[in-house]
Figure (cartoon, rainbow over the protein chains, first blue to last red):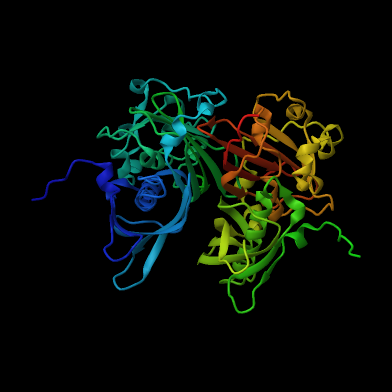
Length: 294
Length: 294
């Protein structure tokens, strides 16, 4: 008899250096984060980013901890990942004084004996977010962005209210504690708002405090903004770039996805993540293929 | 006696396949596009993207022209480029049915005999924009974005009105036919609007019609949006991702840069490019280091 271990994001996204293969890491992609035909793209990004953090977070120059924090990560999604073993191969592009650059690919073996297939290719810039915390400009009041207007958590809609067929193909709905604002759940009853906005509260059910890796996951945690336009279906990400702008404070995150340009079979989707201290801690934009109209 | 040839964007950004080095291309970075201590980042992107277009635009499957058009290009800027010889090394990551992926680096030799130094690293997805033109969804009216409100070209401000010291360090001001909207040139007389917006009309003086490569250049052609916040100075790009959404119609382009999150020594800068047919043909976001306050 096996016991299911308690949910633990750090264990799910853990990477282990391969002995004798510098820069390569073993991972085990978590089935708990399945959505549609693959694993949540943000989780794949977090796994890959964790390997780069291990590579670039080693001593460099006069910095004993190097550059462990993702500042900007660009990911191209090449094929749908499956739960199970994977390898992250990293490349150190450049170690700098304030920023280091790296590349990575996430690979899986599809058939025994066959060569590995790439799921994700990444380029990234890493630094140390503590460097930025003390900036005078951080306090200069020049950020024009405002936190999203969200109903209180207890008035928002949990994923237990999602349509049964959607829950069935998306185990990750049981893994993320997501509460959608009532203004953007009309799609679930055939009455989308038409604004192209999706917003809500997010935390892990195990109440792990947010950090830069969790932000990388959270930029792709909401249902696609296209749901709010009445296009219910899988919107596969072609490219996603996330900028981590500050180390998040503990507590709930507020996440907003919007799209403004739905055309030619693609949409852009912008995400903002705000922390409990009312700071805009991450921004991302992705280019996604539109689902066929339902 | 030498004669200066007439300006020609295609010649300036040309790449030539290196005999005997598959995937490698020679380029000659144009001094005419110098700005501050380097070459305009959009021009570097166009040169690199042209090499990837040559690689991925070859026959593949049942497509004689393969995937010549950039759909999404993510660039990490590693060091300032200089006018003169450069090499683009490309890597074909995957050839697919509708999209192909590639990587590239732009390299220059800084000192004779020394190894090449990377200026730019790129990951990209290429396709064929003609595939997207006929999409039903393109006509579904779901694009919420509106063209920018711009004064007529003849009421906008050309670069001949820029401060002399700025012109001196930015030869590209004489190369791009840029007309800034009067609402966002207050910085030139010490009275920035404070909105964090920069917008104007753009074309090449030789009146070459826009195409996807010119769009990649144009996403970084305006002065930084930080000028409009009173921060006059070089804002080096850490990362820039551009999405080309449609093949542009001939004529002037309208370009808008905005920033909403100026914090921690960095800002994001979003660009939109609209063509003469009122279509949003390109979108980009970059993460840039803030200039020190003047």
